[in-house]
Length: 264
Image 1: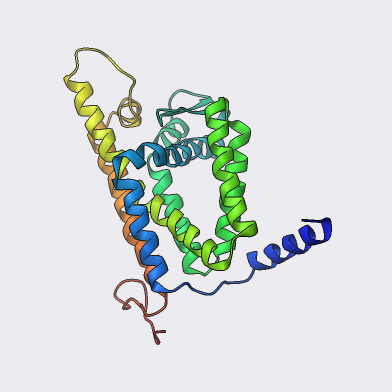
Image 2: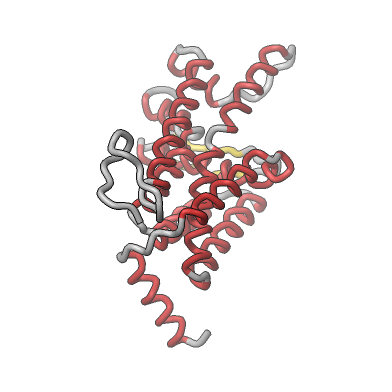
């Protein structure tokens, strides 16, 4: 690709950022949902795709840490799909509570935000929002595996956005959004299972976010698990409504997301 072609492609993408794209056919949205369910539900694949959830989880911690005035030291994403975000500041108070709370809801809320963009037919804007978020996260990654994982994910999104046909871009955007909405629930189930095992174990282990919140707020850890679950389920329901509300041949009634005068 020469310089002129590169500039032309860049101008085309810039124009598409501000212009709504055509809604995809219903079968593409449905196929993306089925594929996302497989990526979340099939354990051998989940061991790999869970890295994406970890990236969103740690990104949630990092973003809220910055928003609450804490100093973000670094982020690590490990090959066992665990992660760590380190920030400095008071080890108590509202900022610490919000920072600790932000991880588990982050994938679901990010999926809900992406669903809102897709509901507004902003497919290209979604893809480039993801690229910007991953680039910002990459700056704070402090281990090789984490850097390679974030870079690989960002490169994939960039290649799809830059070279992919409209159908490929739409399918990829819907797949990623469905995945985040579905995947936001599974780590919360795993969280409670891990807490249950730890409570039965005679050996101390690493505290979960829910247990850290229990110490910070003096509210039961199980309550925080329920809070995480409620946010994930709520985001899934709202996101599903946004994703299917106005695709070809489908329109939800005004009892859910608003009235529809026509169907296509």
